[in-house]
Image (cartoon, rainbow, N blue to C red):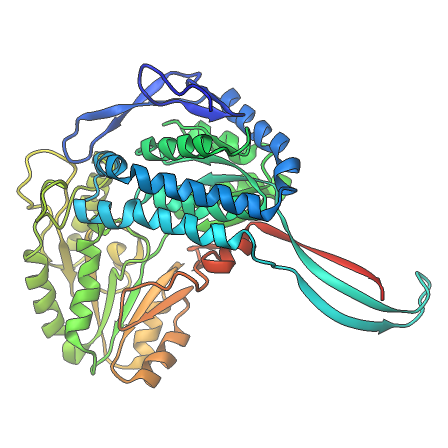
Length: 490
């Protein structure tokens, strides 16, 4: 294990060595206090290129390791992460602004479960065999009874770029399946909160991953990510973040035909029929406010409710929003913490103000939250909306819910599908058959019926501008492989 000591405590892992950022350091700010948590390395373009080259050099040997060896290392990483959970949860709360409940339940424990899942996945046989097929003689070859298989082979070097909302959980969701199938990786966490991901890199190093198999570069400058996705040694980009950045990554990767796995923006449609159980609806929609301050791309932020239940739902959501405490993430009774930065806070407030200017009714105003410092926006409810309004059309990524009435099912589906996004949507309807039929008509990669819960084995990813490709369960393993067909005379 290489020496990780440094003045700031945080360095980059490149080719098995812990190195300072060649362009110095930058400050990581606690969103709740606006104080400096620590300094993170600022990578240079040369740092990034060295990391990609190291991953490429390590790939041939790593891709040929016994899958049981890869499984053992992933299992060890999960166990080590579990051991370090008590010290890492306060760190991720400080750098990401997560509340104690979100930090303790979702930020580190889910990452541990993903290590466990893909340690098992490393020994999964993804090969598909085909029965022999008689093929007649051609000018190319004599006739034969041909056998064949389709193998799943590792795609190569993967640039894993994670978002700021769930930095460790999301990164493990990329890195664990990629390593399981034999890829090597360069991790590039979001600039706002890279510290826990650097600690994750330390764990990979400690448990014995070979040099170059796992690398990490960090930085606040856009150049860091841009150089990584353009590097010729990178075969694939796995990115979670904004649609705007995702488009730039696709454009940059086109030059070398990089494979892409992208989970991008969402504007979750939530169709509420006249027979919906309103308790379930309010619980599901309130997750926009109560779960990491709405900083989640799968949230049901766009509520499309039958006009007969519209007044009831708006009234109940207003009561629910006003009962959610905004405050210090470390306080046990805090439900809504800060958003990630002052820039994001101001962006969210701009969306709220635009909605009011465009005619929406501001039922609950999250700008009035009572906090004198930190990057806070409280639960916000905009009613009387239509699909032409900017807060309805654009991903806000904050604690803002918009409500739109509808009169019949066809109108509800038209409203739901009139969006650039299609990541996760919802149907609340007590008639199970009708709910399922409505769900299949919504152009979205995933649909929740009467729940905002997830199933971790099903395919996850988006339609339209919400992304490319799928992960989750075995789909996560397949995402980091190429199909390779092998045929022979039987």
